[in-house]
View 1 (tube, chains in turn blue, orange):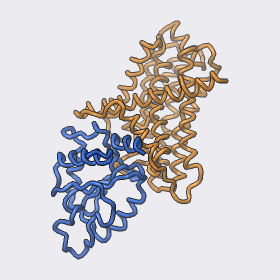
View 2 (view 1 turned 135 degrees about the vertical axis):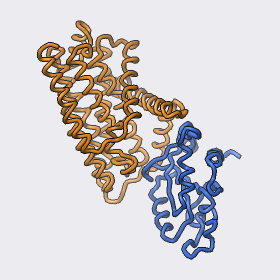
View 3 (view 1 turned 45 degrees about the horizontal axis):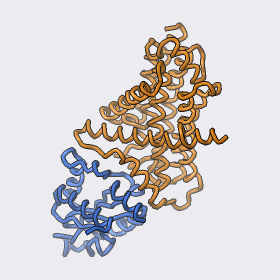
View 4 (view 1 turned 90 degrees about the vertical axis):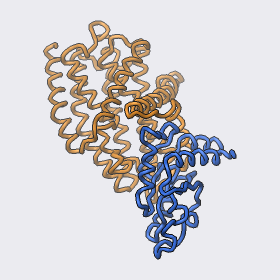
Length: 141
Length: 304
């Protein structure tokens, strides 16, 4: 198991899911793949199909329409697969907390492994989060 | 028998070709990254990717038949056979059989066909769009590629054997140094670009519109097999070009720079061209490369 996880931490393929976000977090995620931040040096790649994914990057408040779809996407991902909540909306529903169509935060629906706060989080914050995630998966403090 | 198995599984075959291919894949990613002013992945990245994929769950969609899992294996087996035949022809040309060039050309069409079979078996609409595009691409690039190979065969006095082609080039000069040779080489570089599924001909995998195209339903070990097939193709096709066109001196010291030359040409074309639509690609292949290849055959017949 540990060699599996070890290989996983060195080549995380990311599938990006937007659960009704305002697109700011999504733009910041794409910034990670630009020359300035280039996360491909850690083996991180954006993939198009959820079947190839090792990590689901979820942005946005989970509205009622998105919840069943989000569950389906999580079931379609091959395990082991980690879930990363990006942005304040995915963490705590942010300003949509008392909204009529957002019932539950993300971590009541899916098992979230990593929270990256911010509105939107800076790319540096996301890289910091990835480092914490890798350490957590390897069992380090 | 044991020697054959050794050849197929270890030295010029599977193990060696997979290592070389994954290394070539890393070169592709690194050069692309440098061209885009990025740093790029470390050298072991593609090996790690394959190990990771082998350790992941392989999901088989509901209601698919066994072809879904058999198809990637067929592709890998045939491309390994190509690598073994080619490697053997380079190391010791003598024991090759007559017509191994033709066998190799047939075997090189099997990996795209296997991805088509797998995509149709996966019952995913995006995969079947990718598969239909892949079929159109096969129809588009095979004809000019075959004509260019025919030009090489005519040029090397009708030899349909790698050893014959290499011997002819060693006695006279590399095929690429003649008029017919250079025309055929240009056509072959375009066709190889399409065979590798690189931009501008990455139509069947079109990430932005088809997600991952033919590979969309594959995960875990089956995806790893497809990635390995791609990697071995990336090693085999530049070697094939070297043998056909720059085969004057193929000792290791000359083979590696020539291989790198063809690899870098492919990567440069990939990074400087946007993707074509499938109809544009078919039109492209059936116009300029087809005319060039025909001209190459005619020039070769007249001895140029």
